[in-house]
Image (cartoon, rainbow, N blue to C red; front, top):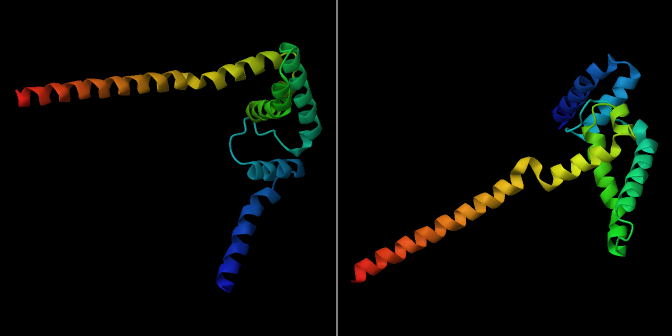
Length: 154
């Protein structure tokens, strides 16, 4: 057990050593990215933007409400969570804070995101086409089996 504990301590020290060579602001970003996990573009994301992210969520809510002024109550109830998910994707994929926070491109970025969600690289369409082809192949196979069965019984 002692050996395992010593090995864990050594591993932790090795992981922290490269961070000790970085300036303090970079250490925070590196640690945050490790905590957040992969999938962040640009490497600028950190906890320093919590207030800006809340503001962005409110902007998204307002934009969506403006697009659907007579929305049903159930949609309005889901809106904050939808806006949060959209904001998370914008935050995750932005190359830098300026791009993420640009109000002039927000509507366009949301539209692009919506298009990707509806049709991620055409995968939904391909999936439907593949499913239809598989169903057709099964139908043809069943017809062939039925014809062979008839020939055998004649």
